[in-house]
Image 1 (cartoon, rainbow, N blue to C red):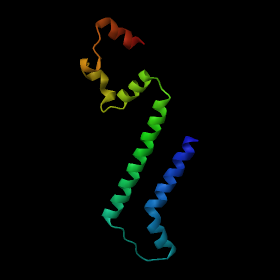
Image 2 (cartoon, rainbow, N blue to C red):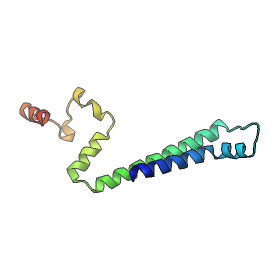
Image 3 (cartoon, one colour):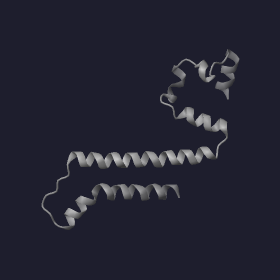
Amino acid sequence: EGVEIESDSEYSFSKFITDELSAAVLAQQETFKMSQKERAEKKNLIQRTKNDIHQKKIDEIKNLMTSAESRNLDLLNEKGASSWLTCLPLQSLNFTLNRQEWHDAISA
């Protein structure tokens, strides 16, 4: 079902951005011009809509999670989350581990 919803929205986005071109083709116009500004506005609107859909999906998933799982998801979505091996632990986020805790966490 998720793929179906996604493909439906992608189709809608495609129709939205090409509707004027389609009308020009059907009218058999020899030339078609869309301003860069109008094109950029449409692309920005589509991107904002996609971001809203994505955020709604995240919120739905978070509602099904425990607080610990939700916190982990938030941490994974932070910028630079994939670089955890190259950074120092933050005491403010309660990430300081002693040697044994670190080894336990890595082996888990």
